[in-house]
Length: 560
Image 1 (cartoon, one colour):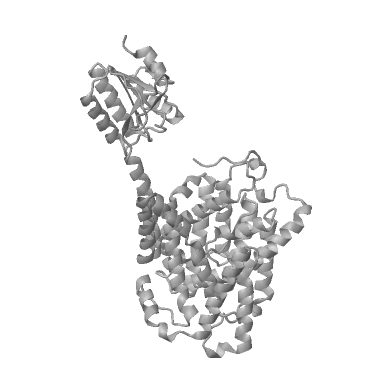
Image 2: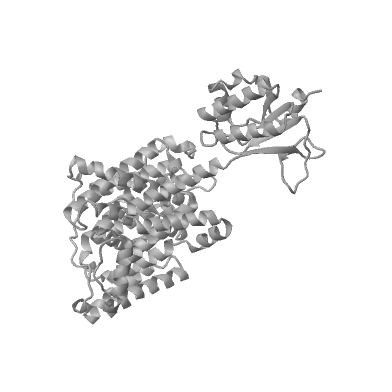
């Protein structure tokens, strides 16, 4: 079930994130915007490198994401742009269709951005926010751990000054280990120096632009020591131009090939956007308008694709920076985007001597940050079965081609949900002594059973996944004992589908045939009540045998 939009949603079809903004908030937004820009500049450069793009493409993705979300999104703080969570996924998928860095690769990435954006806009328009819940927490944690491994493996060669190996992830790891003796000491110092600097700044305060400080220091070190001639690669000359918007020119069959990858990316973006907007709500006393934020993120990807960039995503760390530095609205994001755009237009030469190893160090920090060790330990302690889900998801993303691993992770999450539903069984209720309350039987809680009455319940939605179990459990109970009155306590049955309705009809007919009075108590769910009407269950169960409590059913129907 998706969150309902605030009452004022219809009055602000656009620029919802700026509603109520006052000039008095400008100083706070200016401070937050400048801090955000300082954080975003090195991050967007590094993320672009991760995907096989030039830094200015990352900058354009940030500008497009920030501008479009400010216009179409709802959250006042959310920062949208290039993101290291989705970049390895689409980079791995695109590499199967075109050579990384080639014009075809760029066109495919822009087309993918358009498709992802369209899917997100449709999801927001049709209020499909529930899709964001496709990934359970253990699967999400495993997914992020697997993505982190991909980032580390892709960046270690640059940090070590080694050639980039090819092939599957495990083969690349073996190649890197075998080449460790050829490590370039300068790139090693730069990469891990940047990693240490960013980590230290982060621990002191998230407001400190550690990545920017580290990149500036690394660049000055390269220039001062003349390291470009000693095997230290640098970014090189940037174009310093913004392309005109256009639709990518690729063939129809290529658009079709991109659709499955676009769907996977869209699901991940929805998951992260929902998590971000719920973690940093515009108004804590109102539910987050997740669907509207899907629209904003989708518009960001569409705009990014039109300018030749790649899909964008919500960023929890950058959004947190806006909140922590006192940002009041999307004006902070727009100011940051303006700073980045000015850098693209007039500051390209400033970036030409940035060492690639420094960007690798930034990405190593990002990879280590997204591994949620605390959650992994908690899941291990509290649920060994779900800990295996973490391991399986991470292993799938590392061992398989990354887009297949993500698809398998989503499948594992859905299968886990299905498995949890199928585990439901019929339970027996007992009366709490000296009360009219009926409660599930428990070995450590004393309860009363009545010889001629059976009160049972099924604590899950009744559906095709568990209908056979429900019917079998009830038939087994009736073989063990023959009550004169059977009451189904239905408070947990929030849904009944067609298959389950037929099973319930069979059970009621069985009781009627054997002279057992069948009744239902606490059918509280409106959907379940509608199902009783829709599937004709009242044809076999008179309406006066549906009660608001078990006690009322006993008062009316218990044999004298």
